Image (cartoon, rainbow, N blue to C red; front, side, top):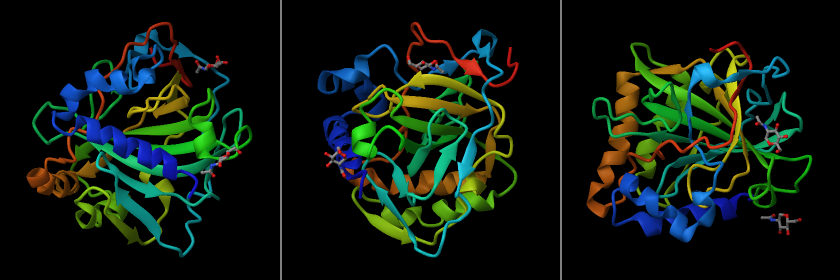
Length: 277
Ligand SMILES: *[C@@H]1O[C@H](CO)[C@@H](O)[C@H](O)[C@H]1NC(C)=O
Ligand SMILES: *[C@@H]1O[C@H](CO)[C@@H](O)[C@H](O)[C@H]1NC(C)=O
């Protein structure tokens, strides 16, 4: 309930972009959403030799991610991506405040060789896809809508996804149902699952910086945690992601290439929880 506003704003943004290719449309986001032209935008390219080691960065701690309960999760297509809503007892520790989980979603490319798909890149290299788990600062703000416009309002975990040989069973909890929500605004209820199974094993090594939502309205409210370890899904799983999106070609709402290109770092420093250079 609390993040309904967030989703509506994102769908509104998709309207503006509909006639153009998504990547081409990005340069015009700031005409409608001034924050998209701000100086602390996401995603960014992480240049590892320019990161700053910060030994105070402790491992992030997913809380309740594995206590998924029996109630189905709601998954929907907002015209830009697939979003799985998360129960409010899930949260995140290891940051200066307690953050409550809101939703997770994916970004990917179009399957073309070398076309990328992730939003963040590391040393100029993109991955095939990227998972974001979104949380809001429940110590400072009453809900997602209030938090999303505020500095330190949100914490997002970013997980780079690569295509490999092995099936990743955790991701089937989402991918098996994506074909049910091929069209914008469709919703499906999916069996609850262990959200931690989507994360890399090593939660101790990550990059931390202050950035933004990567879709309009691009609020500069996000404490980003980008894990160093990538997760793998199989080629067949990657194709499931691409296939469920290609079906939409007819109504020009292609759910693909839904990643934003990297943004200038400007004055910002990217901290690393480990010696990354
Ligand atoms: C979020 O909290 C604000 C401030 O208390 C309140 O005005 C608003 O109605 C709440 N929004 C939702 C969606 O609950
Ligand atoms: C983010 O911004 C806050 C407020 O300016 C600052 O205290 C904090 O150190 C910054 N964090 C990072 C990772 O740059």
